[in-house]
Image 1 (cartoon, rainbow, N blue to C red):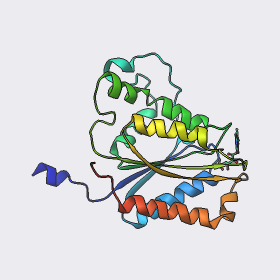
Image 2 (cartoon, rainbow, N blue to C red; image 1 turned 135 degrees about the vertical axis):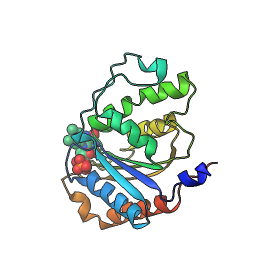
Image 3 (cartoon, rainbow, N blue to C red; image 1 turned 60 degrees about the vertical axis):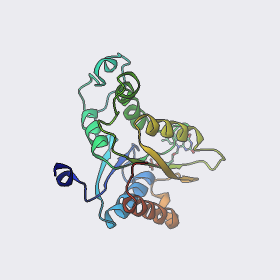
Image 4 (cartoon, helix red, strand yellow; image 1 turned 180 degrees about the horizontal axis):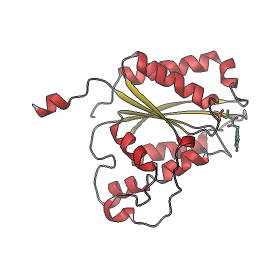
Length: 205
Ligand SMILES: Cc1cc2nc3c(=O)[nH]c(=O)nc-3n(C[C@H](O)[C@H](O)[C@H](O)COP(=O)(O)O)c2cc1C
């Protein structure tokens, strides 16, 4: 009976924006993704890492004891948001071939979730509910393999927190603020990806 009461009726989609640039290219793509998900009835939330005070990981190893990070800053809210979500979409531009410092700080702080999973043998996000992950990026240069280094990191991140990686949308040769608007196909693809993930909620395999 309690199970029925607690059963989710809508998919919860969490967007995490990693760009330091407000309303820039990845913000625009993420907004379309979220708009697409909402159009299919998903409950959505977007957090902008540039607005949060998130310290870098201190490698103090305190998290190895209970899987809890001892740094009490705004990352505590992000842990709760990750746990709540069914779909997690990260958006970060390429910076020096990697994700932004904001995104990297957030990812590194999930070392406590790594500890939960690999040291304490607990579900990293607190339960075994299936979750799906997606990634969005833009980069100014137009070179082959531009996104490869970030994709390794993003896939590793999702793997560690037990979130199934379901794909990405990455656009090279997009540099000035708002340049993505000159690629309406890209915005449409982001909207449709949001719709798809909201329509096809994570399932236990
Ligand atoms: C500090 C910094 C480093 C960057 N490094 C790269 C890079 O290594 N490769 C690249 O293609 N573009 C690089 N760019 C360009 C951004 O990836 C590009 O402008 C992107 O579209 C910005 O997205 P945003 O508007 O969402 O911030 C860099 C930009 C900044 C500010």
